[in-house]
Length: 273
Image (tube, rainbow, N blue to C red; front, side, top):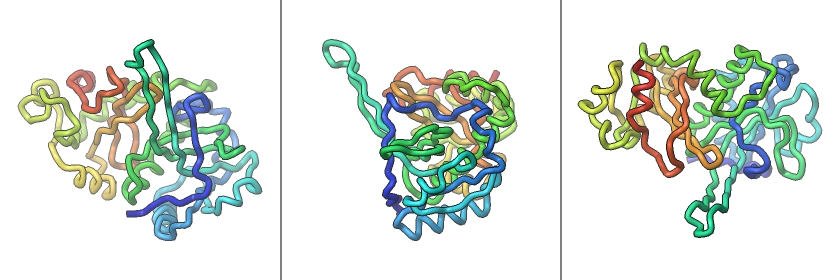
């Protein structure tokens, strides 16, 4: 098990920042000619894993790994920084407290600068479910895929998460039909967590498998494999369908309730059409 031990363990609160990717192309004017600085930790094993991933897969601009105390000196127009952050959300609602909510998750963040231990001008956030080599590979590749999509989109507008996912889905949803969907039974609601149930609503290739096999597909960069990930966003959850190769996002929709962790039939019907 590797641990991130950076002294810049930043805290993002809901009032500070919550979206997953800034889609305004003007914010990336200096990106391709600039440098992305990945902030090291005190864990040498972690640093080596990140460096090996970057050497093999990071292609969108130059990169360097730096110590936390170098961030302020390197801040500038062509500088972008990546580190783990703790994102928290809380809400007090209703007289009975029944709608109260509070949670925290770890995310990989790209930002332009930080002040008072808070990221400023955040461009990308990718939720981390754990700190492991395959999860870091996934998150770094997904961040890079998000940035590539922003350049392809080429809009002078920062879309909210729902509109961003609508753009992604419109462009990529049909590609899922030619790939193999890797799912675990725990991913799905009871009425479709078996072959007979899923086949009734989904006409394309799928296999029930294990989390370990999904992680292997990511490690192997299996272009045919698509997997499911559920992310937190303020008081909502979204389901994402992601290609194992390059962690490219192919589909995303909002789920019906925050306490919902399993994916229901409507998403598969949507892709099946």
